[in-house]
Image (cartoon, rainbow, N blue to C red; front, side):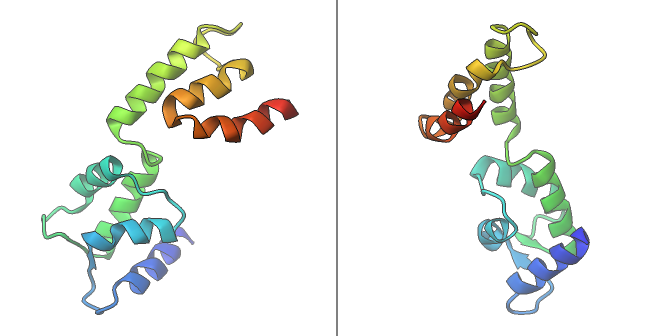
Length: 129
């Protein structure tokens, strides 16, 4: 099913029917399949997928790109390391130190990663627990 969805998206964004999608269109393509396109993550996934450096992605290259992007869950290696550091810092404050992020630390940890907007999202969650 997943490969069929990738094919559908590829065909939709291959407007000139050249059997390639321009890297400049990748941002819109990511939005179409439900990802939030982040520049650093796109660059890392492109480094894996655009094997010939053409600036165009064939279907197999696009599949490799989407797989790499999804595996990183939209985070670059640097961002993932930063998230891990924040998790480690906040998880030390709970009863299962290092293994779990205590619910009372969730909001503060997410604000550290995503900024103050995260508090708007986490507050209702925290109140429901």
